[in-house]
Length: 363
Image (cartoon, rainbow, N blue to C red; front, top):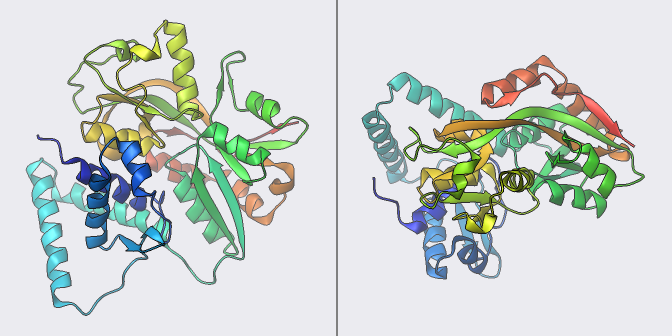
């Protein structure tokens, strides 16, 4: 299969971010210059991607206001609209049927995608009177947690920003976040999160509310065509890595284990090619931009990739004591400690939920 043009890869990356709630209606897309540096391409390539998204009604560009994610459209009085939708659906069906999928599993996948879309784009009235600011590591379940919070306490909204685990804790320090998503492995104690909270927020009482244990490993193309077996293979000259950004918990774990293996990151092809989320890692491998990346199993399952497990890590919500007492956080903590929450996470795949809802206090 030939690789898609780069502008289509950029457009598809943004479409997936919209689908999974990483970009919400009204959010501004990065400036063209910033995206061209990120994708290492000419500004015109990014502009073409934005134009394609605009033609599909997913984004709106206005002079002086940048390009923003469009609000969901209602039915329009255009007789060609439904015909175009049917055409797009038939094109998709022919593609997946030719790939060997059965009608029943296609229908199930479409229903799941629609359910996820509704969960992250629903905006039930009235508008929330309060916001909880989440900053931290990317996890596919965060969008579901945000949607569930709106159902539990309609007066609250979880405002989500992915900036890596260290970025989340720094945001707590600076007062720019109310809770942080973290999965930072401490090499010295072989534990997660608490040592970093003590170092960065000394003297503050912080709750670590466990979202889940999640499986971390290597994401690779289906069938493992390059015969990858583990981290040591990253040093191979014929492999290209897609990496996470500095400060991401995944990057912290990778760098520590590369040191143990005696592998110089400078010798790894693609080590400097960085993306902000696990979904971006999966998309880079799906589009053949890379051969391997470190990420969570949930992303591999979502994108139909193979997965080589390496460890199970603890993903916590770090919540200062003064925020812990809020109505919204108490409702969220109660839900995470329920069988319903564990079922939702298990249905996503890639999680272990024995510790979901447990609380550890860091003094």
